[in-house]
Amino acid sequence: MRRCIVVIEPGQDPASLVILARTVADFVTVLVVCGEGEHPRVASDADRLVAVAAAGLEVSEVAAAALAGVVRSDGARLVVLASSARLREVVAPLSASLDAASVSDVIALSDVGGVLHADRLLYGGVAVATLALQREVVVLTAPAGRASEVGEPAELVDVELAAPPAKERLARAIVERDVKLPTAERLVSFGRGLKSRDDMQLIEGLAASLGAEIGCSRPIVEDMRWLSVDHQVGLTGTTVTPNLYVAVGISGQIQHLVGMRDSKVIVAINTNPAAPIFSVADLGVVGDLYEVVPRLTSALAARGG
Amino acid sequence: VRILVTVKHVPDTTEVRFDAGGDLMVRQAPTKINDYDRNALEAAAQLKESGHEFVIGCVGPAEAAKTLKEALAYGGEYAVLVSGPWAEGLTSDASARLLSAVATAEGPFDLILSGDVSEDGYDGLVPGLVAASLGVPYLRGVIALSVGDGVLDVERGVDDAVETWRVSAPAALSVTRLVNVPRTITTMQVMKVPISKVRTVSAGHVGVDESSLAPEAVAVRPVSVRPATQARRNEMLTGDPDDVVAALISHLSDLGVLS
Image 1 (cartoon, rainbow over the protein chains, first blue to last red):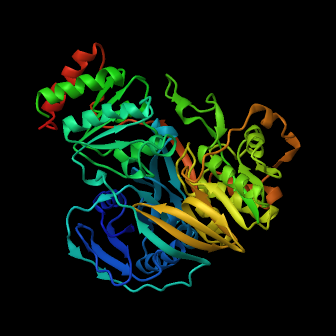
Image 2: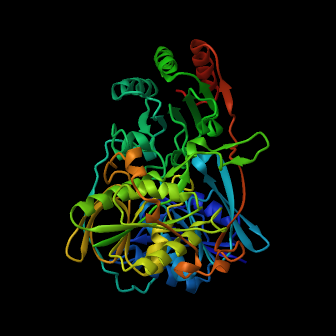
Image 3: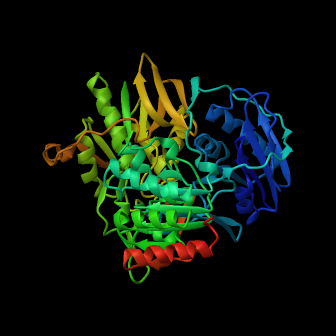
């Protein structure tokens, strides 16, 4: 029998992580890491729902030490962390503390003669690698969505807080978002296939005709700097699961694919028929976005969305 | 301060393909410095301009020496390449052990500077594992940094927030591509770097027993690689743009995703 602890932050939906954990574990605990005085409520069908709430858990090394204590007393041999920016930083110190095997962005797990095997994407999403995790304890991350239900209050458990390392958070400023990618029903996303910033009006027109939010791939934010990071879909941006995802001029780097591959219907428009984005698309249009997008926009407008 | 910049030699992921027989064609792909590590090198180059110095550490195949010549053109004192027959298919845990061994053997360093992730594996674990192994504090997602008297002032992005941190040296930081715009390195600048500045050493030289890098000994062992497929319709629409658009709208309507 293998026990698993799924670790999330407040507001994250543990559902996909619990499903992943149940493929190899018989007893799954969901644990929410929160700030002092918080009492999170979580909708989950896990076997147990707990929370740790304390000042200082924003320091990854402190959170890792606290989690290691919970894992040891539970006897869990698998820890699945939601791949948020903060929890990703917890993986290494937690793994070191537990002498665990660690791996990021796992899409599937299997048990091969008692050894866990994990699948993850490699090389821009063209390949799936299977890795044998050859330690008694395994720590991994997997993408999680945003919680839409309030759910049950989590049982608070005590943790031992380690002395923080020589590292202190002095300030934290919430970045105001004018886009709501995590909750969007429809999304039009674009990438390097767009030749100039002015051409973004093509994307805006298509998004308007669909009533969609606008997303983009990493290079648009980090290299071109045409849009702010709150538009970015992918590993270092936002994970999205809309009903309709239209990828325009996006080749499909792994960084992008892991952020959108669970969308309900995926449409890809790209000139290169070998682009990895087509491997995750339901409908692939091999063509020049400058020819396809304006026609699609007016056809959608003509039928009223 | 004295800085160790870690650099990964990676295949250009946009050129990695499966051949007709289903074998991954990685060796044929051109190789390069991991993009994120260029930002780490640029950050180090800027710190060098204010009187600090940096050394480059790398784990990889012997041909990574070429990549390191380019990395040295950013101004590093020298580079250490840990290489051996085990280098192919090395996973994050073993890479991190070797890089922390480099940090110990060539140290002391006040700062270990890395890119947040590598383009090929996108695992993002190595910088944190190096920090954990060395027992120094670590911050990822760095978008700005400055070096003070024994402290590092850091801004980093975390999901929906920007955070300001103060970390005492020695520490490990990994940067995103927002931290700076790397300078252009010319072919001439690379040619001027003497190859003697790249010191290729064995695992044993930095104090890591080669047997601990064997497939059965590492924490994470690659088992297989296969083409990525998804349970998707993968219906391709080609031809005249007007026909394609009409077909697309018809499909989307059937799928019930249009109002």
